[in-house]
Image (cartoon, rainbow, N blue to C red; front, side, top):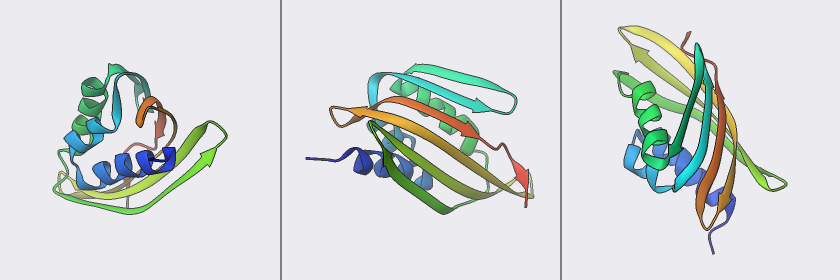
Length: 121
């Protein structure tokens, strides 16, 4: 049986690889996604809609590396974080996302995250 932490780790591995299908595969078909990013709250109710946000945020980087990540249980949720170093439009930036997810039936059904936004390195 897959643990909630393993599901969350596979989600992060998808982010690290910019593999939007792998991200989507860890999400329940219907879910509650909320991403607080500069400048707005982003929401989706489907796996495809949530995965599309990650593609919008990450696909323009010409250089891309996940430099750290963590996953740990918090009662009935899983806390995660990861830090990315990117180059966008020739500028080196760092971005960090932190969040919590709920997992049922081996898929993420709730995904709440907050993003630092693109910060200069």
